[in-house]
Length: 126
Length: 283
Image (tube, rainbow over all chains, first blue to last red; front, top):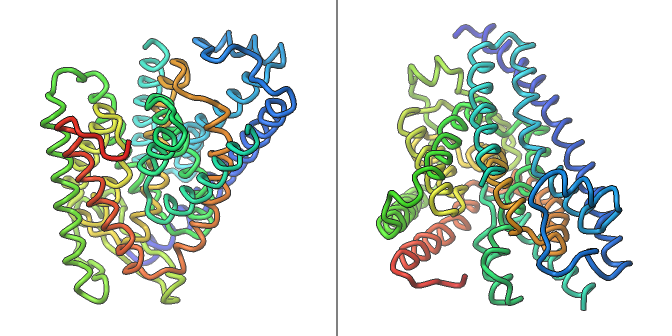
């Protein structure tokens, strides 16, 4: 690798890292806010809004809970957003590598995303 | 009582976040005994909280590590292929392998790495590899980082990519099959096998473990393993703690980080071997 190429590669990486850093920051801030709101509701109301061993089995049950403003639903939404942040990070990486024309890493990252989606499906089906 | 336990979870989270972000591990080994022994919760809830803890540590610390350019994004992306396929293979193969054999195997691996790291400690300074590796060059894995402890830019070259990838596949397999934290295996793969310096290894492990954990988190999310009133105060503490840890780590010497890391992986190895024989150590 020549020095010029090296420089280009490291500048490209910096660009990509800044973008991904921003996405992560937004993800963490938004999920924290939702989690804090849910937690405050839980403390004020003194319960999760359901019986003790209750849990959601599907997304539609969660959405229903959010509409009914259950503390449990808001808290779970915050956690779901936190769980999705790393996945969003992978999606944004694909776009960033593509923009920098680093096709090898576009393929690598797309492959990782596909495996992630497969495991999400396995998770929901389980 | 409610406020009291929320505050404890928050404090535990801050501690776990600081330690996890420095070492590149998830903190399940600290959270599990606190929740099961300290609070009498079922192990299922401890596992659910640990998964959330890993993701919180990863996202919280990675913000700082990306900003300071210390982690290696290409290494992370490339190795994620190995960890995620390993994790899926593990989830699909559950029941086909004898868990005793696996626990002992992975336990011994941790022991071996622990003693290898002690050997490294005897040399006063970490050696930086500068050997050219064809595959590493082709994948553009070689990089550099600015060390805030020695105030210099450190250029490094990656070695033995297939070896590192195999270890990562094993790390993914372990987390899929046994549900154990694979952060320590990731650090070992990069630091000991691929000869990446400890700080980029730990911060890259931090980035990667969030992706691995989120892949399995949906299973726990919909099966009732996650108690939000436990996981949320902990996650908030971790996000705060890992932001502190990610800054502290950069000022530390690699030697100090290693000194904290070694007893932890030896303990994890011991815990795993005992678990294989049905003895639960602090969990």
